[in-house]
Length: 184
Image (cartoon, rainbow, N blue to C red; front, side, top):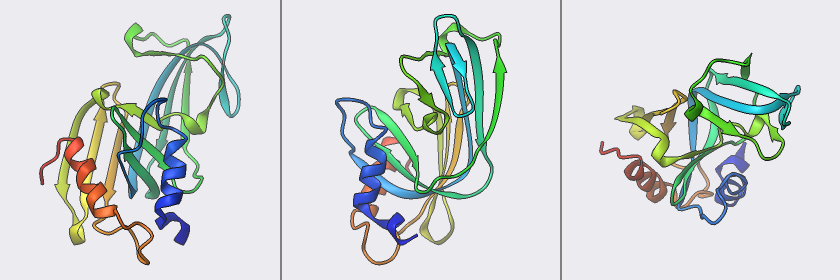
């Protein structure tokens, strides 16, 4: 658990999901209270742990959910919101093959995609709404809803853990809140 509150570990974890050509501007430890990620992928085959592109494959709608608290790293780049688990967790997955969907919602696969990697990087322009409120003990509650109806209910703690492993937490938390459009 102490390794969670380490800025070097946070950077290393988030950098796996940062879009090419961008850099991490701010990143913090946070807590996800509820997660619901929606993805629609075409021309693919679903396996137990991944989606594989296939010209003869179908369209797969996925809803990846978790309704309990768990530790995450939350970061922003020039154009992206990046969310990564601090430790591996399980999710509830619902699939629907060949759904009737809007063409604009479909994502194209160019390479094999692990189910674990779905919902780790979102364009900041895809945020439909972000509600930010004061929480308990100086924390901030953040409810982010994406245009595709994915959502995250997060708690951004006031401090970045004990021991000084995240010395930029306060500054980065304020930068993330400002970028998400929240004045509290």
